[in-house]
Length: 183
Image 1 (tube, helix red, strand yellow):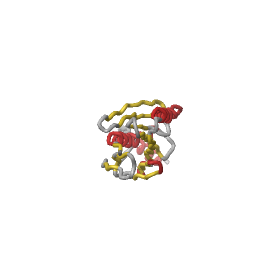
Image 2 (cartoon, helix red, strand yellow):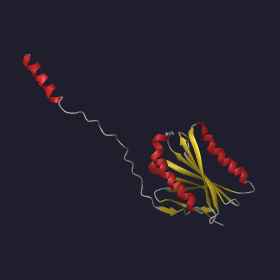
Image 3 (tube, helix red, strand yellow):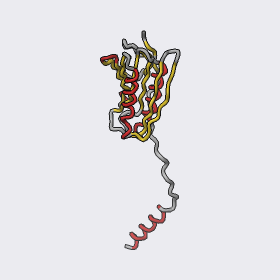
Image 4 (spheres, one colour):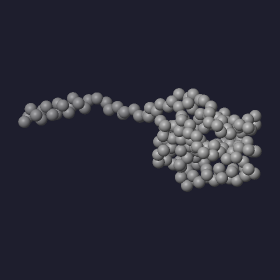
């Protein structure tokens, strides 16, 4: 019995002489496809560059769905011709953004203008657990109106989707910057 107690005490004393070192913080190791862009080839009244890692699905009414299969997300593109209704189209686009106010922590916007290509619009950042965290609309103010919205195929959790959100947001900015209207 004394030997068992002596052995137990020896093990306790020998095993407790090292310093306790806290474990380093763990970070997600997210890897995204390398950015390579190509112009959309669908027969639409507009064209812009999309990442080559995406798939572009042509929809009726000159709409598109740009799918990010690895990120489980898509950018939905809606197109409407202007028929003396630009004010209504702009109001509808703003209304769709501000419907997210219930779940959003903040909504900020940036104006975009390219006089040479006749592309004018606005990019919206919607932070929080909203259904769509990035949206934009662009127009030439005469014939064309286009709106884009980012959606993830999961319940919105802003902290979890933030890295993918930032990755796709850069692509959406590129879409705006490379957009050209076809006559």
